[in-house]
Length: 149
Image 1 (cartoon, helix red, strand yellow):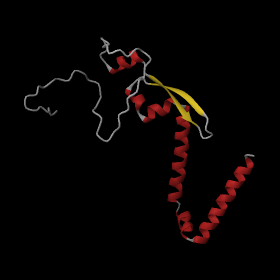
Image 2 (tube, rainbow, N blue to C red; image 1 turned 135 degrees about the vertical axis):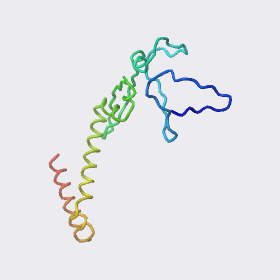
Image 3 (tube, rainbow, N blue to C red; image 1 turned 120 degrees about the vertical axis):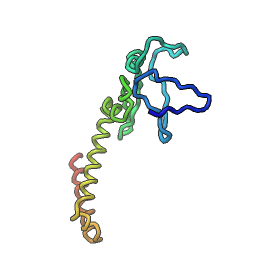
Image 4 (tube, rainbow, N blue to C red; image 1 turned 30 degrees about the vertical axis):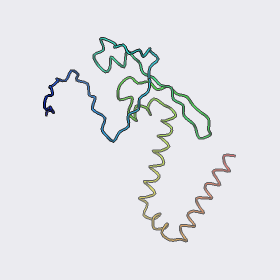
């Protein structure tokens, strides 16, 4: 381990063994109140680990999502560890975000299959076959729309 000490500085030994790293310069830090407990500037004594801090404050936030039809949907997100702040931790707590992630995964899988389909790529290079393919897709879309009525 390399200690970085400047002239006149003091080496301060690490007091905690928690895995909290500095935020890199290409990240954005969002700050929000995540507890209903009073937030007076009084220290809370006796909390020695990050887990104890999460257990004491029980951070939660109510978020509002807008669905495709414009309706709003409220969900409460709870944070029991630092992992809950990661993308996966937030998605796993929200039915709305789980559905969006599943939709995104399905679209990405389709895109990957389309890009790797050599026959389709060759067909899309020719204007006549491209127009025929687009007409077939439009016919499928129309059939789906009419079936939902």
